[in-house]
Image (cartoon, rainbow, N blue to C red):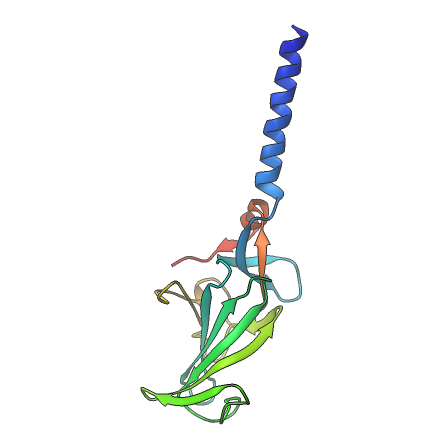
Length: 176
């Protein structure tokens, strides 16, 4: 009888340990949208190391799309590797810096070979022109508008982090 109770307690302990690990140990690499300067997860997008994503916004002055391309680094930094835009003007570079490449293709300016590394980024969903989009996938096949998840004018700290199942349940998973 004592052996049976010890076995049941051992099994219960193992099951509780497994449940704890599944719920609270961060394991899923994600692009996390934290509300402003808080630790409140507004939304997240599961990604893997070396995955790419794009943030597309409509420039508030010339009203053309600006595409910023990023890659998830193995240390969870975010690397900007390309920017694509249609018009020069306020906030748009007029040429490439040393080590970068500047070219014109299909009516758009491209600056490639960027090596801008960010541990996090502050971004804002457009308020005046609220057409910001997030693109991801092997062939950039997934696209969502920020307005599907965020209020116009809202701002976020964007980070790549491992989330636990418990943390993921606090935010909204971004999906197509």
